Image 1 (cartoon, rainbow, N blue to C red):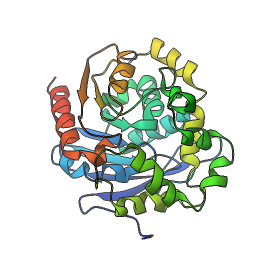
Image 2: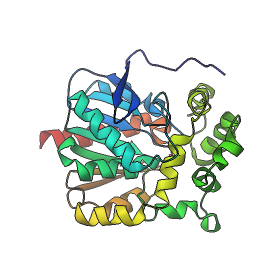
Image 3: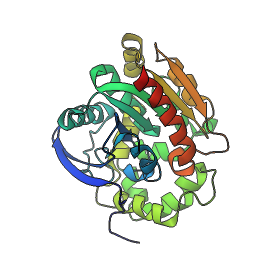
Length: 293
């Protein structure tokens, strides 16, 4: 397996100190409104490597590795979505580019919702890609008796991820995580798997995911209360693919402003890797309308 970080000619890599941690992010594009991309699991900024060049022709694009993921510093056992949200709040402030178009996927949902609710001045629009929220049905994905996935319990249980997955990170990704939810043959290459496995296999490389899944299972009441008190008022784009209408249904319950729903037919869960052209088209059209307004 290649141990050198993957990169693109179009991006510049940066590290910054914020909120007591060190975050890695990439930047591309020099004109247009700013867009911050936030990955899910089992991903890093590299999940957007096909998407970034398509977006950077029209926007300043930033893609971050959340604390505990990618080439950012590893997380502690106490890591949660509130900490991750504060990391991003400070990152946007340090970059001095707010308000940003915020776009994320999968398990980053609670992090981004907390950020948008606590710091609406930082957010120009919100794009949710294959994303759910605790308190709005996301916890059901951990219920194996109703079709949920075993890996959520493994990651959330103290010490179990390290016990079962340490040294087997690439096998977990290549033989389960990506094949189980990808509907586009060949979209996720061996080189892609190598890059994701490179960072998850470092010491403590799973702690970011462990923290977000653990907090997902306990923070439903907090997110529901936050949504009732501070629903999203910025324009929201809900992008569904393998999860069908789940993303749109979720965000219909937490949005008081404009909501647009887009479905990527025939695409699995990893929309940015499986259908970058379709996703870019949906994103660019939405962002153009928001900027024009």
